[in-house]
Image (cartoon, rainbow, N blue to C red; front, side, top):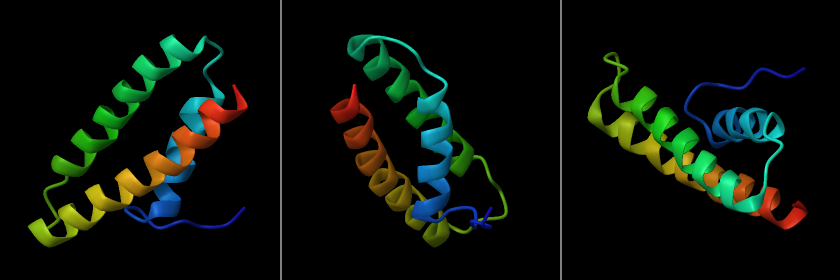
Length: 78
């Protein structure tokens, strides 16, 4: 098992993959759950007080990249 740093694309891919792997539902339900997972992770980023604004923006960009990769894989394989 490799270590992945918080805030990297790989970190968010791992988090999103974990949540997707625990979902056994139709595509329409998965889309709704996907939005909820994204919002939850976004709130996590915005509520971490030790970050300055530059790091938060980078984390949001990384979350978006990971979200795009993972959701594409998830919906293609469904």
